[in-house]
Every structure is written in C-alpha cells, then in structure tokens.
Length: 58
Image (cartoon, rainbow, N blue to C red; front, side, top):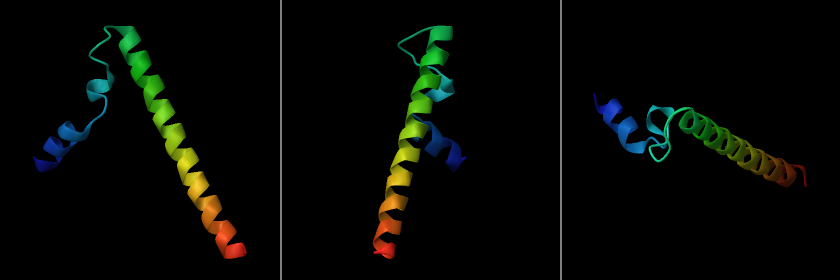
C-alpha cells in the first residue's frame, strides 16, 4: 500500500531498534531516543501555546 511505503520512507527507528547497536541495548537506546523526541515536541507545543495565550491576553 501507499501508506506502508510512506511509513517505511519516513520512519526514524524502524522496528524500534538501532542498526548500529545490537540486542537489548538497541531497544533501550531507541526507547530513550523516542522519549526524548516526545518530550521535546511537548515542550515545543507548550511554548507555542504559552506564546499564543500571552498575545491574546495582552
């Protein structure tokens, strides 16, 4: 399917593993990277929301 090809082309950590590292360490590193990315996106979204509410309140 087309969606499968798009996902394969854009995935950051395919099969939730790093190819440079083998075994359990690979999954752990992939999990830490994923958590850091989600945390960064949440911080960015919070900053955008705070900026937009500060503009409307002023």
